[in-house]
Length: 206
Figure 1 (tube, rainbow, N blue to C red):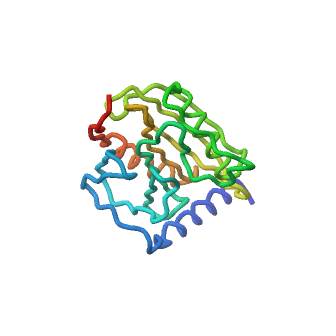
Figure 2: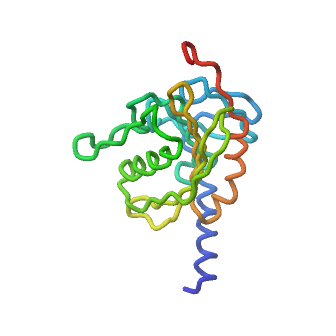
């Protein structure tokens, strides 16, 4: 198949996947309504409708999607405490997940995410492409981009993340989607969520 043929087939596949109904277990998140996420004081105001996934990747996290899981996923991490993992343990004895440390450098967050994903997805095809300082939730933060492929899957995925450590806890919002079609189409919706994000005062915080 020619490169043009491959590209056309990929776009056709993407269009078919976009028509797939979102799982019934999801809950609609309306456009333009401020909503608290990840069982925390983190709130966002999306510029379009999303679907909140019923399954949570971790105790203090949740995932939204527009079309379906794996097509355009935004994940919120709301106050990951010191010595806690980003995700639920997959195989704690053989492959324990790395743990967040409240005293880690902001630039270490990207490595924490990369190592956590590599174990959780059982894939070595994970790479942090860029890391740069940013302001997130009114605090000094870090923004990074990444690429990866899931186990036994040829689809290349791209992602972005913004994170900050506030009162000793990690707050982060990430986005990931297939490199073909979905990432370019939906990354602006993710960025609008990040721009709208605020955090309530933490009781007993510094």
